Every structure is written in structure tokens, then in C-alpha cells.
Length: 103
Image 1 (cartoon, rainbow, N blue to C red):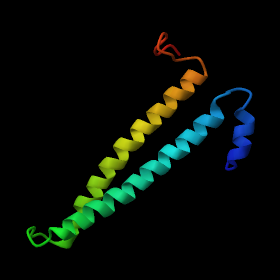
Image 2: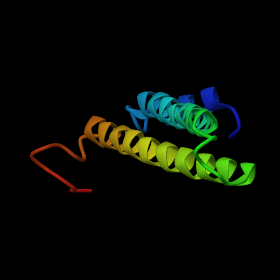
Image 3: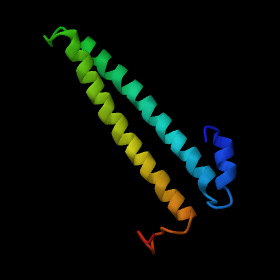
Image 4: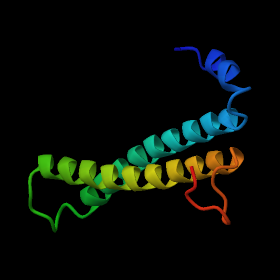
């Protein structure tokens, strides 16, 4: 099951929206990774700019940057994955505006 193409081929007949779901999830997870990297670097460099007014050790700069970036990445990834799941459920005709949460 390490081959994504093989997995897509196996699930294509059973689940018609699986290809688009896998592509959407891949984009969602890479968006989360990119938001973590950008959030960490942005927070870290912002703290470095105002370092003269903030008097705490470097390890706290890193800790605050990691916690901020983790929060941003988690929030963004959860929003994107929920939209991917909703799109897949709509493609499978199990969830629409008229029939909400009928599985």
C-alpha cells in the first residue's frame, strides 16, 4: 500500500471521489507544513527584531516560535482537511446541504 497510484486504482471503482480526496488531502497537509515553516520563521525573526526590548533567553524565542507555528499549522490543516472530507462526502452523495450528516 505504499504506492499511491496502486491505491487510487484499487479504490477508483468503489469510491469515485477518492482521487480528488487524496489530492486535496495532500495539498492540505503540505499547506500545514508550509504554514508551520512560515509561522516559525516569521515569529522567530519578529522576536529577533524586538530582542532589545525583550529580555529573555534564546531558548524561549524558539519555544514561543514553535508553539505559535504549531497552533497556526494545526488550525489551518484542520480547516483544510475538514473541507476535503466534506467534498468527498458530497462526491459520494452521503452529505449535502439537504441531507446533512446522513451516513
